[in-house]
Amino acid sequence: MNDSSPEGKESGRSGNSPQPDLATAVPIYDHLLDERKFDYASKTIVPYLNKQSSEFRELSLLRKKGWENPKGDVYFRAQRRNADQSSEKNDIHFHNLMKKIGEELHQSSNAFKIQSRYKGGPTILDTCMAPGGFLETALKLNPHSRAVAFSLPASCGGHKIRLPRAFQVDVRHLDVTMLAADMGVNNVPQDHPDAHNFLPQQLGQGEAFDLVICDGQVLRTHLRAPYREKVEARRLTATQLVLGLQHLRNGGTMVVLLHKLEAWDTANLIWQFTRFASVKLIKPKTGHAKRSSFYLVAKDIQDNHPEAVRNLLKWKKIWRLATFGSEAECRKEILDDCLRVEDFIANFGPRLVELGREIWKVQADALAKAPFIK
Image 1 (cartoon, helix red, strand yellow):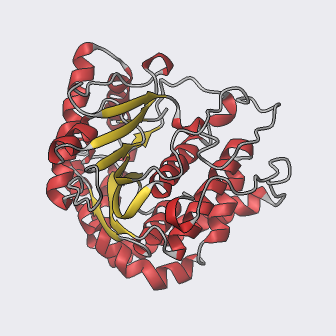
Image 2 (cartoon, one colour):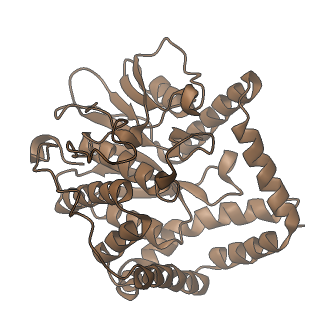
Image 3 (cartoon, helix red, strand yellow):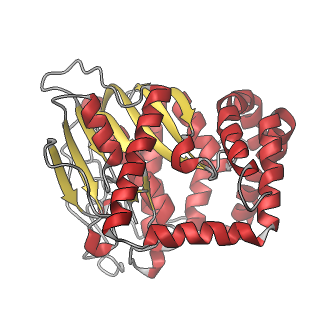
């Protein structure tokens, strides 16, 4: 589920606010209409990007070739199979791969170097740590730093941790998407499928970090309740964003793994971050070149900015809806909170194109050389 492959602090955004009545927190509306609106938003962005970016046009053509060639399915299926098979050799390879990705990411953005102004040295939170390559890179760049790291237990399908014991890391083996108390929910319905699996609060109200790493992905090897299958990605993303922003020191950095820049919810999330942070998008050529994945590096985050506070509350609500409601309700929340897609394009479209050019170019260059494209 959630290994790698916010109300808090001075602003008074504590997790002790009145609890929502989960029995009535889910609104009733036309799910089909909402789904059409969501699809319309994503499909409206793509033609705009095709018109405005030669890099995106080239990538779109190459993607189409890949989709039409069965060899592409075989290629990525083999990659998924290898990723799911745990062995000493695979574990070591994956850890080294993540270190290389982390080093490349840092070289492009200086993402992991901390300029801490606080006593006690630099502090790091890794929301989905295993195998530990990113965290190892960050710890080496910041001598005397301390870290708290969450990691899905290997017994539940998580990756094996390869991080050297020499570092000062408080590792907690757990499923971060079950941190109900940290997400502001203390009263869980007893008839919920996971009623007895939710976990007590892990991070105190005053616990703050200079750097937060949010690169967890849903793992196929993670066994979970059936209700979670369609909403797990949203639950995981929301959890990481809440933990990160809620416990980030003002002016700190978040590194967030994202997918498919042209997707409506991804593009909107990037826009939201630009309103309270300095944002850069990085696509490492190591490990990510052929895929739609990339990293958002948000620096100098102003955690007390009204937009940061508003997004923190929104992400908590998305987690509640995904956990106690449905995927359709999450979509409605995302759409209700957004600009009309036409207004979004008018306000943020040019900036999105600017941010995305290198992302699309890296993937297009890699796909052009792929065996299933030639």
